[in-house]
Picture 1 (tube, rainbow, N blue to C red):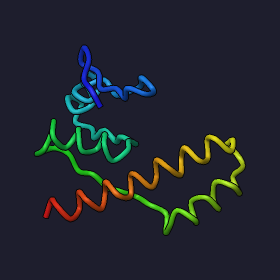
Picture 2: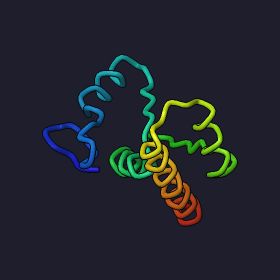
Picture 3: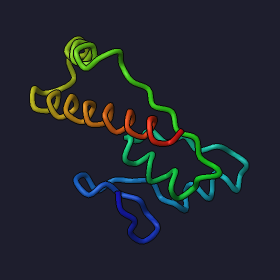
Length: 102
């Protein structure tokens, strides 16, 4: 995750959350909720260590995630494999962060 002109973005997909949007929400005494991957959560925690909380929600297993995606039927075979690969990486990153941030 990189920062460019006040916007966080992911290189491979060029999407992100505007920092100004987070500040606007905080200025209105509201709490922003971001649905981001582990790498993004780590970046947010580094930028806002005293005001951020991260939660990692995971399915029971990669196999269960695959089953759920198959039932949903919204993914192409390539898209499903990409999601499963990303989920596996997120599981590893989350486990590493949990074990090293105690």
